[in-house]
Length: 465
Image (tube, rainbow, N blue to C red; front, top):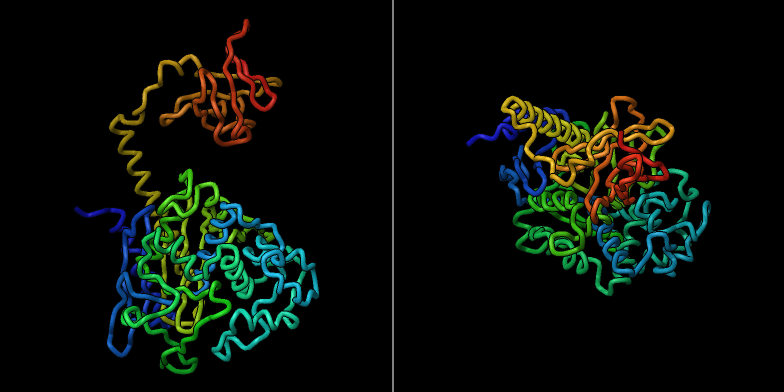
């Protein structure tokens, strides 16, 4: 049976990807779409090996570079939830060697774990030792030895300053606090619970057989040549992961499990911590971009997409997702540098969201025409609570039954939204906890008085009329 969502999705995606591959001279793109807990669509475009003509499949490994940072962040938050560290601690509490850094701006104490996660610590982008040009990244001990030449160059919180070194150091924090090497900790506590069985940090003989060839394009001809490969060594926690579309789909699905009440199995974080990771910590002045814990959020009109990209010799990658719509997109290219993977992923996600909205609108119209709009009758004990309530000085709201929930709604008399919109979650007899809005988390108690039914919320007494 055909799926209208997939049919509409496919049409828009294939045209956009084909256009990007032509313009961007990309040998191969592996693209996947995630809908909540399922990879609903995948296709490999072009060739992951120009010599053999091989096409990417869902398990083809790519270097995903800085997407690794979102894994590192999750590991750090797991340890925070276990009470083993605090995000607002100075880095020097866990890595005393960092005391030798040269502070040209800001303060040493201001270089905290939180600011390192959000790239607002002021730390330089890379260690002063040879790295990208030499293709020989230093060990963590060599990085520590170079601390007197390593600099904090701008004041904390003054601006976004991307730092691979920051995440290399956070990987060392994870190792020291957990007592396990970084790779081992991540494998045990994140990759295995999520079933990311193809993902790994160091290629072995078996994984090399399913590893895409990374390419560099000549600027002045149509020629490609294989890119060099290097281990990131002391900064591995910033970008060493190798993963496939199939495994990254599981990673995106994990971002939608914010209803988990505890960390358990595939719920690698409880829902509260997951929401915290996605919550903006710093905003650009125009609010178009927010920096979260490990993730970046971009605004596209009324939609906000979280995501992270990566670039390393031969490979460019981007994962983007919408928390509201529970949709995600994965784009893995076997070429670097390449500037078009983020715009491509964003366009594909915007398309997926539009298709889903259209599908939901059509379903709602069909249900309305069929007379299926009210599927949940009002419980008998709630019926006396429904109606108009007014608080001094003339602040009205309605208590209504909508979609199976008791709700606080704006009134047609005045739409002043002091305590609306929100849901009322039953607690004890005629007692409810507010979910959403200004009064979220507070408890209200309905009481019969001489002048009728009333409740108090946030210091305002609402009386039924």
